[in-house]
Image 1 (cartoon, rainbow, N blue to C red):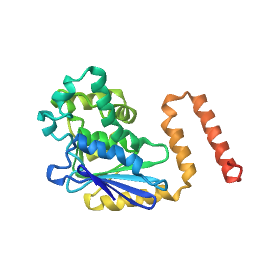
Image 2: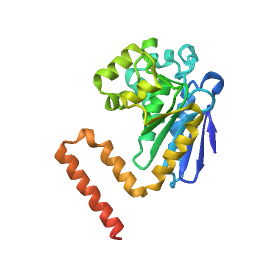
Image 3: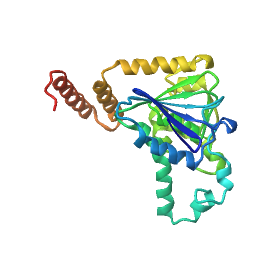
Image 4: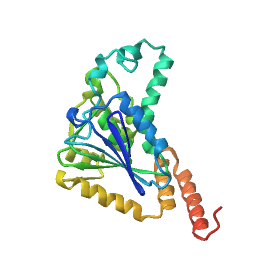
Length: 254
């Protein structure tokens, strides 16, 4: 188990669990947590296939810890705004890396969302491949209420899931979505009663693990790249992936 800065990593065979563990502040996030999460990418054992992301207590994550806005340290808004633009952008790129490693092609990431998933919390859920929502979940891209933009790699994921117009409306209004609306938009893989969240995540994890690992990796790559390919390019990618699978199954792989 690795724990640092209000977040911990636990590995059990092919399943790793990332838990935000600041329940007293509804798992509000800080740059220290993001640095710790970025390091988890390096710490994962090679046999991990599924990463579950969850929040301790009654919320997934209420977003950015507001104390960061008024702080005076190197991660504060004041410190970032004083940097040259390129240096500030590099600083933010480090924060984004805490989220984007969950896109890794060799992993399936699952967010277990209960209660608030606001701002950075919503973007953390979006960083995962799949989202299981408790029926008490509520999501919002609330950065606009602070005069900011979503900058933790969530905007493309949101557009890919719900389309440009709906994503724009969600981001510029900062309004909250309940679990049912989120499911209707395609943001939720499934919505379950809050008491059944852990069981639903365990069932989904088991279903993913039941598939051949190499086939799952190929399927994720095919689907993740589909929106950037033409129909003929996607068909070629399917053919090439299938040839690799057939060769591996026949024992022709390297």
